[in-house]
Image (cartoon, helix red, strand yellow):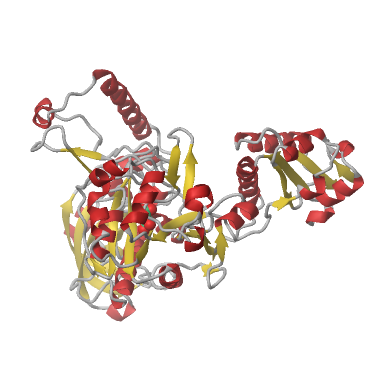
Length: 626
Ligand code: ASP
């Protein structure tokens, strides 16, 4: 891993991170923030901080009386300029944990460039701070070392992406943010226009169609560090606006895009994290295999505890609960949890609740204890069946076997939840390992009950395996897409596909998705027309940048790798957005706001503001640090 922040030679002043013993006796001027002040009666010590590091400054009244006196006024976060001489620190006061720890600057002159109020939280300490407070004062939060490092890491990674792609002939091209509303699975953010009252632009959910149009333009290889907008319910690892490395290539097939991405991600991990990649080349799993083995399509491959199917051993069972499910086309699957065979009744009930929260009607358990098998269902099962469900699936003494019987989707969801719960509880995943994998052969379409139509599982422009084309007429749900997702440690890091480049084929997919031929021209006219002017075969991918940095920086909150994120409800607590606009602005746009809706929104925003204000006035966790 490379050092994160190195001062480039082109910065022609000393910073708080540059000085070393070689500079001893040099006259220097440093500018920065007071990180900490220690007043030892005679001497005043200031830890002076900037982005590049911290340098100790000492004010000695015998050396310079005025500077020492003024230093008595300094408080944390004052921004100052100090001139003085670099000295080797006296014996016994060297700090081996700081790059500048062998020296100090003896101050000869001090200027206070600006004062600071007492900050609402400690900037010089890694302490827990209420997040709404951090978001409201984000400019102060970003001064904290951990956040500064996250920003630096992000910058380095993105720069590497640019260099890597530039070397391979990619062009970085900006695409507009004000576009036409197009379906990509989520709700669009709309932007009204005063020039055309009643008309709206949409912010892109991704530059998907534009990058495809660039392929028709002959760009051949495009990329963009692209901002995407999706107006949907927020989650811990989601934001209403986020950044993707959006790329597209002509004359390629799946392998070309996957190999290029794999090489880029390998380099990034090796250069910008201290994690080891578990397996190279990245394992490739089909969607079906991933669902069967892990119950999801973004498996954490750092640990096993895979789902096992015991349906076959139970086809003729007398146990009605299992038999009924199997006869109804369901399945019985299990995971073996190592070392939890001695769970108490209460613990088993808790685990059962987890399975129920994930949608299972119930959970059957078998505890392999030294005294024998403990299981409420054992009495309904034959010896052969019990063997199949214990030693048959590799369970041994001390283990806990969890069984779910239901339709496949429910079994997958419940066991996935239990697998990840126990993965965490038993610390099965090595935090120093990055297990990348690819998921391929996704279903192209899924049935949308509500809309009574097929819907694209990813985006409507993905093409499909040619051998599955005949299924479009007979069994569309079985058609496999030329689609690939990059997964790392249980996170979906990005997805892409080879696109349809033939108008008739694209129209057919749109029709399955419920867009009548006559409406298609209005919604997708540009792309459909372009496909008729020598559109090359093409495909791409768009890995999310925020999530990647989050994994590399070992953060669990996506907001910690974004400079100015919204909170979990999509509110910018610093700028107070969203907000009301002046009645004249609405007038210009030809808009009327429904008062009932507006009241609701105001109440929600007020609630968020109050909780931020409460955090601000809450007593500090301990006495202020000097
Ligand atoms: N545009 C797609 C997305 O944002 C990614 C892609 O297929 O390139 O998910």
